[in-house]
Length: 77
Image (cartoon, rainbow, N blue to C red; front, side, top):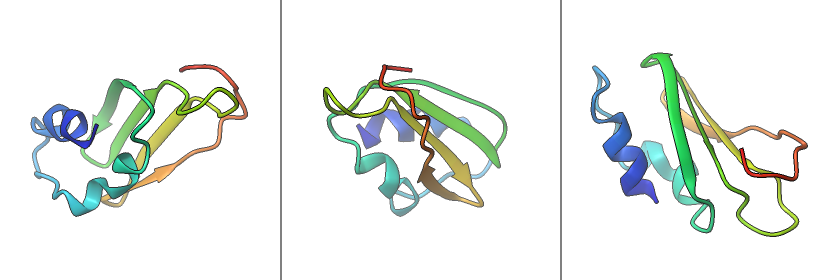
């Protein structure tokens, strides 16, 4: 899955390293469905639930690092 995020972010002005995508790689069972952002510092990824009782996947880039954001929504995003 991290390959998808690397490919999607390849068009950003400042390339990201694989280490910065560690948070994305921690969601191997979740399908990453969409990447959006208004600048290299404002990038969001949404996706499917990694399991039947999990929340939909929502990740954001904060100062070059990916972090999970809790949605409280038990559905795919």
